[in-house]
Image (cartoon, rainbow, N blue to C red; front, side):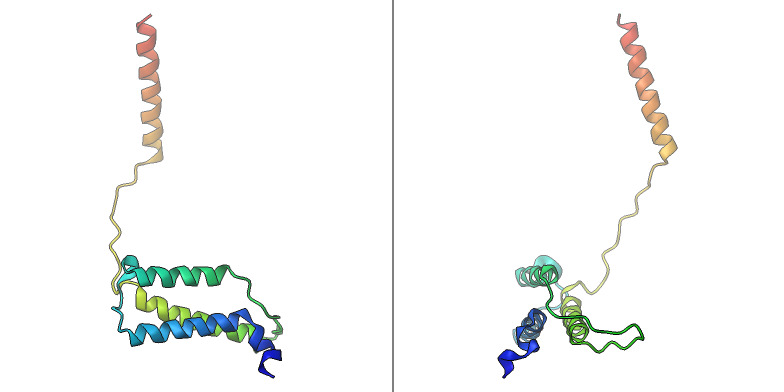
Length: 129
């Protein structure tokens, strides 16, 4: 009976099962939190999430425009995003990395330098003749 249901054949349902197992394995193995992509397990998890995002999601979207969002595809997508968000929050570093502040040169100054370099090159080649 379960094999005939749409839930059994849904790739999204399989992905949810995989993410759920992955989440439990993280807890059971007591992996270090917030290590970023420096850990090979975290790299594999992010790669798995990327592959899941690229795969075709089976199912029919049957929500109505009146705001009723109760189709199985939307419910599976919501559950998938919740699980993947929990896993990613475990992986990402706890604090933000500081972004280096760099002076961005003015476009007008860059153009003026390029123009003066052209004229300097042109005048030196004409004086050599």
